[in-house]
Image (cartoon, rainbow, N blue to C red; front, side, top):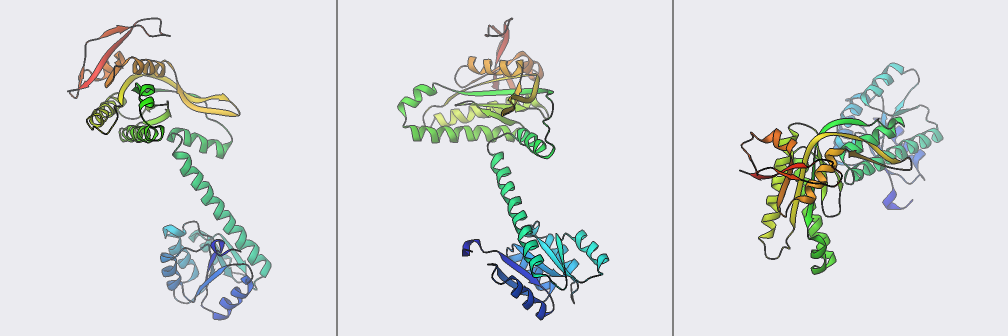
Length: 344
């Protein structure tokens, strides 16, 4: 076993003969062994060091094994570290307390070498799998929305996808005007970095105002607000996005990212769409379609909103709305009332 993969095991027993025996039984397995004679010292060691497994005597002088286990479990770095008790026959009542304190398993004296090695190895591998899955979960959160992640975790646990759900939402779309032309005048690598930085700020604002990003749409985002005062929050978010874009445009070294935004509020369906082999958990409905059309209509550095947004916010002293215009949008049978949103 290569040194970088060697696991470190902590042995806690107030009898030196038992500590030596366990060392011998684990020799040849490639473990680094640390041992101590007291629960107090074990807690100090666990507070300052990472261990891949802990073998703990159930009955010790001073702090006993159960209390030692309980205190080690309170240490963040050892909340899931395998803890196996070394116990004698007939200690069932104490074992019950040991499991309540957070232990994972027990080995009965006299110790069977095969049982010790196999159980310890199995628990370490189980913990490694847990950390791998946690890393996948954290990585997943960087690529999908919190709502989608919850759905995926629910599906992983039950094997069932939740049914489509109708909800009142605000949909906010953003888009950078003239991006194609911009891509012809800036080196690809630099443009990609600038775009990523610009969108990152938009995403930060969306989450700051209680929404989430459903997806990226090339040089813009599709954000959903469904908790709290969604009409106000989506508007405040859009205003800050435009303010940030204008601020960037004042710097000579920064290219002009002229952003346009569109917002609507209404009923939408949230659920899985696509084939069983490739699903997208997303928001669909006229509200989403209209917000996208409003975004496409909006002039550079402006926010186009629907009558639903205007109705919800018309008495809000933080906002100013332009006169209403009736606009014909593809896919909509009737003219759509559109206003421009500005801060007061």
